[in-house]
Length: 259
DNA sequence: ACTACGTCCTGCGAGC
DNA sequence: TGCTCGCAGGACGTAG
Image: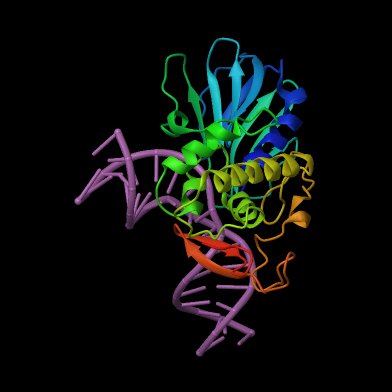
């Protein structure tokens, strides 16, 4: 959390606010969140890659934002605590609140290298996703299937809830190692479907995640697996179980989801 | 080149 | 009631 659907929702919401806005001040309250952009710089565009938000500036710099697991972006709402960054523009103020401080803000200059994960990041989800290509990437990787999804090489932006939901939809146990092509394609299609549905619902506001106006997403109401440990599986009624896979909590149905 | 693991962090709920 | 403990979890640095 926040995963790709949450970040995409924030990007959409910020788009009309920041495009063309003139930056007046960029203030860092913690070294992890720092983008020393000069006053007067104009934001030309807002993009997203995986779970990153990229604010492009006309002169070529990019403000790179990652929200870690508890980060929030608020527009014209001053956080009461855990405020680590503020971007003042002539159109409003962008605040970053992040209780666990796993997030990051940095300024990329033209010619600078992006974080290492950008190199291995897989394709973006969407109606045009090449499911066969992503399935092949998934089949070439090794280890537990849950860990392989979280590597984000087959599809970018997968986090823990999307991985758990997709594995449940594709009826695969998180500790599955061997999968055939049919299973791989089904899993990729599940990932893509869940991401698109979650974007439609404005993401999951289960814990920290909020929209830029402080309102909540609603996809948490459609989760069939994640966060439902002990509750009945919505497919078969069997109580869902929780185990640790790749150092992460993994909720699954040991009747529906087989290795 | 690859994989695996420790690190960063605070809030909250479980258990004693 | 009040304490401690463990978990929540994405990305990155480093070790092997």
